View 1: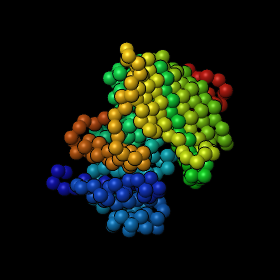
View 2: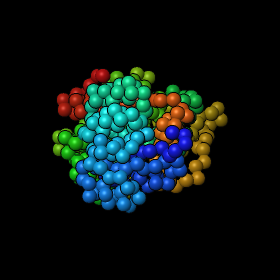
View 3: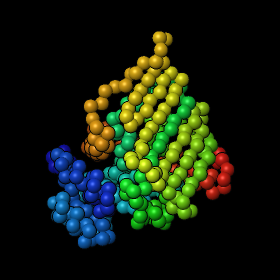
View 4: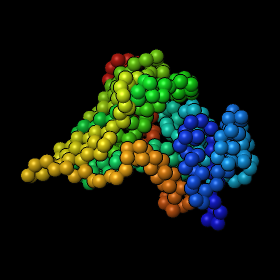
Length: 334
């Protein structure tokens, strides 16, 4: 592997592959895009031509027939992630899977266990973990500089006019849900990761929109640490800009993103300890995807150990509890 480029297969030719991943992969040194597979072969062929990819196939079997794959990027609809991940693992490839990992906690457990049995990395493309501002907030929390965290708020409010959700993302059979699966899984993962992924004991949720394809979700979670977490996600934000923010309040300080601000309480008063970030907010997102790929490829090359995605099992148990809470109108204990 060290004497040749890493061969990366791409499963799914949708927006995430086109807009995010392929432009990054096309510029990475030491990487070869081995091919792209999608049931819509004309679309796959068009995308392949755009990025100089010679091999086009209908599925992963056809893609793997072109030679060994070191890793596979899974960018199919949520409901097809499990099949794609398992096929990639069976072909001996490491896997980077678009978020969310799958559509249930049972499926998440099956995939994590399959990756462990195969001795391969399964990594979920939670790029917000690689945002510079979120990583700095996590460092402040982990160091204890904010004291004991007792409140976390994660918001992802997308304008109704920005990019209306349609297609498979609004079909529960393919998406596993509505905005809670589309944005909520990411927003919750970011908040939980920033404070060390505590165990959630109780959840309460309200969903708005068609059953199974909710367009807004509002969550209240209680952690075993005593912290309270809230999460708001929507596709229906009527505003002139989107909001995607993380706020953390502790006994000794607070932190917030968008833009990054960190304050601490000291004996003489409140001080602003915000580290400088000389990057525009849009660049933070672009950088996060590049850092995500850099981290994944280091694992593929054996430079850092395999990392089991067990936190994603807990995430899906929380999401399922949120749906139960919304269905019953009651708080759910995990």
